Amino acid sequence: MQRIVKPKTQQGRRALEKKEPKIIENTKNTLFFKGGNTSNIVTQVLKEWHLLKKPYATMFSKKNTTRPFEDQSSVEFFTSKADSSLFMFGSHSKKRPNNIVIGRLFDGQVLDMVEFGVDKFISLHEIVGPKSATGIKPCLVFSGEFFEENDENKRIKNLLIDFFRGANAEKISLNGLEHVISVTAVSGQIYIRNYRVLKKKSGTRIPRVELEDMGPSLNLSIRRTRLASDDLFKRALKKAELAKAKKKKNISRDDLGNKLGRIHMSTQNFGKLQARKLKGLKRKPTKSADKDDLAENSSKKQKVDEEMSES
Image (cartoon, rainbow, N blue to C red; front, top):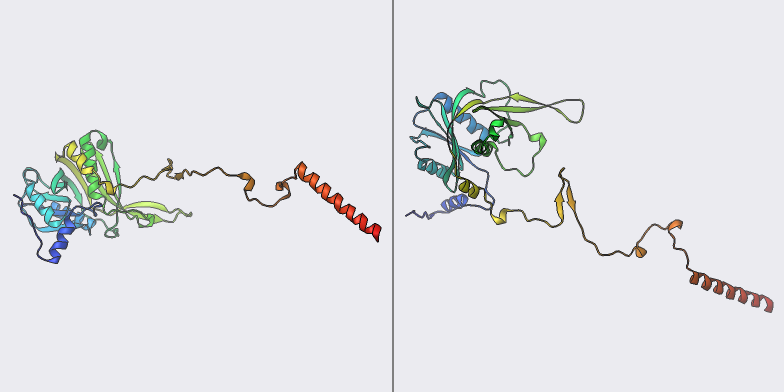
């Protein structure tokens, strides 16, 4: 039987409430940890990606004798302790040198895992130049037909997007766009590059945009994959009814994103419509009105004539 944890302090109660499921989830936190044996390259990869993903990242400095593809319970235990739903695990062995595993969890259990081999690594400290600010949401660029060849490659692309996308943002300022992550796949090889966005003068209001390499750079090869079944993946994508935006009636958007609305009005009486007082818009008198005016004018003239005769 699963042990029910009851908090004994207010701090513990708040910590458990923070880990509870929410209708609108927080930004995903990432755990970086390493196995019992690692190389300098793997350690540096973990440190630099932890630096880029701050403040939504946690790193364990101690070594942990775990193998994610043989036993997922240790990964689930560590991620639960760090309150993380994404992880990057690094290890090194003679059979699999410079090995990293990128994965994600759903409902406290491992959902997807992909194992990569680091064929080439260039540290950000080896590239001279300024770096982007910490905590900046990156712009992701995926290139290559490899990601569209089959369902497994599409799932790998989805996992990388989930891992690199950063904090949730409702609005994005173009002036704050400083970091670009480019992921290119060619025949099983994945090339990850990090660029800093430079906005230079162009003589117009629109600046000239250039990309400057800032590191780190990775050349990865896919080794093993452990992906969730279609039913489990579909259940992980399901949203709560309260989280879905309510559809507004008679409101739609066109292909350019313009908002269109339809309104319903009662029948209008154009005779009572207020318009500018122009001669061309004045109402012409009817025949009955003309007869009444003539009769009134003749009676007035007759009275004037009688008054003149009496005087």
